[in-house]
Amino acid sequence: MTARIISAPTPEVVEMLERRMRPESRDFLRRHRYDAVGLVQTSVTDLFFFADIAGKSSNVHTVELYGSCPQHVSTLAFFGETSAVHAAMEAIQREMSAF
Image (tube, rainbow, N blue to C red; front, side, top):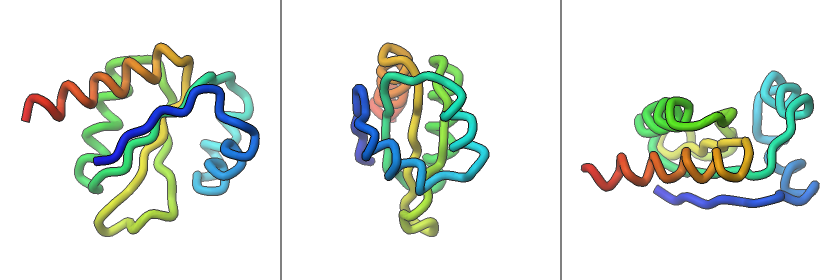
């Protein structure tokens, strides 16, 4: 698993992320404010598990990003306030430490 947080993403980074998501997610994010993006690259199995953990632990909007190898590796993006993105990422890290 690779994880990163981008605080105050630049317009160019936002554009890159938007190209890799479904139109519905793009539309949602254009209507809502967010300060940070958490990125997690992981297996497809963990993708669903981590998305569930993030959604239950904080107020983030979770998006699957396309362009990774969908059979083996996928990427999640968590959009929200900085504190919410940090809370989601910390919850995932805690869960990983439990294994």
